[in-house]
Length: 541
Image (cartoon, rainbow, N blue to C red; front, side, top):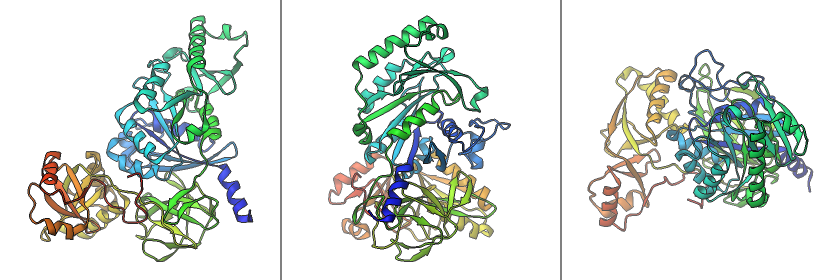
């Protein structure tokens, strides 16, 4: 093994990278904050509440997020814990931003699925779980909010197994629930952790650790709770499967943890087990086959763009997942899509909105690069032999609206704002095939995307806009482009628009109109997912 390969292997062994997925309100941002608290990255955690006086959560930096108490953009947080270097990709929980979450999952090696103990599996969690399954990501489950009344733990495990067809293995087990939630039993160490509450969970929880057979347990726990716990444990250990890490790494079994992010109960136990069980940075598929992280030449791909993270500097940041080799400040790389050579100056280590310039990064790390219009989502950068990683497709939007600029004197700002938000993937942009109609058409997965675009155009570019909703709900890309479209002649009950790569897209009022057209023109091949511009088409799609 060469010196650089040995250095890369050592760096890969120390790295863990994961994204958190959940339904809105399951406590994702709170859990993120608590993981940072235990990682020593922050000293006091701030929960997300739409309360002015409260410290805002570190991962929610955009003004609109802080006003509404929701996460709109994915952020990247990096911290050290137990000698490991952790990259935490925080994603929006709101379904209107599932596309941003999908792109972030392309850069993750593991996923943490967060479930509310009272609600169990919710629609958005299921949707995101399917994306993880498609990508073959290992999934770790954290059942949250046990400090509130909730469903029986065995019932929750059963729901995950039945509905997601995913085997479960409980790594720890709760003792009590709601007001009577006293702690958890850690099956790894065979010890009971009894927790004391700290004020709003802003500091690390104090816990008393007792071995399972210790006679003091009966003094510290109410008899009823203790016997209930013993009964549950008997069922779990008699009927439950053994932990199989190979199955976990293939996404077929999920280690389950119980706790309360708000009060910090069980967060540290989860983090400890995660470091031991999670996948280290993995190989990525490219046009040259699988590229292992220890491949000596540097390569990586852009999975997210963000404009105006620092409004004072009008910056644009490209988030790059390092896939192989060693990244060094000021290195020059090849840009696969354009063939240009790019010098990577001022690379940044990201911590939500805070940045620090970094000298080097390794596979599994995420770095921020200033993006003066060079990068698009899905772009590959590399050194040495040319290669391109799998591209990141766009989903079919379901809402469409003309975006009008009522103030002609703001034309330049309007154009710039639309262009930068499009690059970022905040919304898809299309244009009418009729040259006389110049207004951009916003195409979104959810209504909130429209609101965010208008809010940011006003806030970051000083442009007020009006929306004119269009009566369509289905979009399909035409395989074979304009040529294929011309061959079929005139089409009914559909309108043709073009995306920003000048490819024809058909918009339909409803699925019925789409099926009608497909029956009339079986030779016309239509796609629900936009063709990838850069890189390989992902095989799973």
